[in-house]
Structure formats: structure tokens, C-alpha cells
Length: 227
Ligand SMILES: Nc1ncnc2c1ncn2[C@@H]1O[C@H](COP(=O)(O)OP(=O)(O)OP(=O)(O)O)[C@@H](O)[C@H]1O
Ligand SMILES: [Mg+2]
Image (cartoon, rainbow, N blue to C red; front, side, top):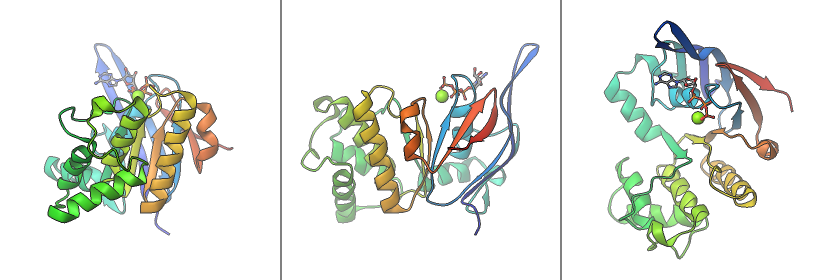
């Protein structure tokens, strides 16, 4: 079976005066569809750079990212934006909800981007907010929610379009250990529900048992850890 994501000889180099920072140094790996992948590694090792390339947020110096047979390097700016919008759900550490919109409206905003309208939009928002355990809190503004609840709205926003790929960069940074683990378990559950592949960056060793596969980055190089 074809891999969902293929990364081939991926390089990202930054020139800083005389020195070259190899944020990604010839990274090659493949990921099966619907799997749950964790990427660990020290600060500055290239984790965010890698997931940003796969998410179409940034472009490599050289190498290929192929998602469902589609070569991202061949896409122009507009098509890359399209790819990101339709295909990828992002969950970041700083959840950046729109403060003047309710939980429901924050989720609707994301679903609208992929063309969902009218009655369907409302249904989708209710559906997604109940999937993340926020039934009854649809009308709450971010300021009325706890950190963990806001993170769940952010997850709801990421899954509102039922993305094939969910990219999660340090989602538990501001959460206590138990809330963080519940959050990751929730990401896993909703990804199973929608058949999404998840690539998650985390420093938290205690989460590794939730992953199908674990990779470690150091100095721009990626290796798989055998669990
Ligand atoms: N725009 C840039 N210009 C120059 N260097 C950059 C740029 N973006 C990232 N880097 C460098 O690339 C390397 C990898 O950065 P990256 O953000 O991917 O690390 P990370 O593993 O996500 O770290 P953290 O755990 O701290 O988030 C770092 O050395 C960083 O300083
Ligand atoms: Mg990072």
C-alpha cells in the first residue's frame, strides 16, 4: 500500500553570515495512513521545521515531501495554500483562538474555509465540539474557558474540516501532566474517528506509549526509536 506521507532527502539550510544552520539534514522517512507519530528531540533540533515542511507552511532547500502521491515541491504558492487549508489541521502550543468569537464561532470559521455553509456549518461545529468534550460550552468565549478547554477548542478548530493530516506542535506545553495526557488521548481518539494521520511534536516522554511510531531529531537528523 502507498504510504500516506513520503519525505525524501529533505534539507533546510539557513545561512547566518559565514555559517550554515542545517535545520534539516537529509531527512528521509515514510508514514502510513491513519498512524499516530511522535517526533521528539532537543530544542533547536529541527522538529518544527520538519512538520512545517510537511504541513506546507514552509519550503525546503532541497528534497521532496509527497502527500497522498502529491508532490508539494511542484505546487505554487496558491496551490500550497489550498493544500494547507483543505488537507491539514494544525494544533499549536499557543492556541490563538479569536477572542471575540465563541467556541462555536471559532470552529465554524475553520469549517467555512473549506466551503461548509449554512445549516451544515452549525452541525459540523456542534459535532466537533462534542467530539472534544465541550458539549454545552458552544457559546463560551475563550476568556470563559480554562487553558485545557481552550486547547480543546483549538483541536476542534483543527479537525473541523476533517483533515487527512493533523499536525500538532507541543500541544501540552501549558497544561499540567494529566490534562496534557488527556489532550493527547483526545487527539488520538478524534484522529481515529476521522481516519486522520497525526504527526505530533512533544518533549514529554510519558506520552510515547500512545504513539504507533516514535522518531527522534538531533541536529537536523531524524532516526526512528524502537520502542
Ligand atoms: N528563519 C530562520 N533563520 C535562521 N535559523 C532558523 C530559522 N528558523 C529556524 N532556524 C534554526 O533552525 C534550527 C531548528 O529550529 P526548529 O524551530 O525546527 O527547532 P525545534 O526542534 O522545533 O526546537 P523547539 O523544541 O525549541 O521548538 C534552530 O537552530 C533554529 O535556530
Ligand atoms: Mg519547535
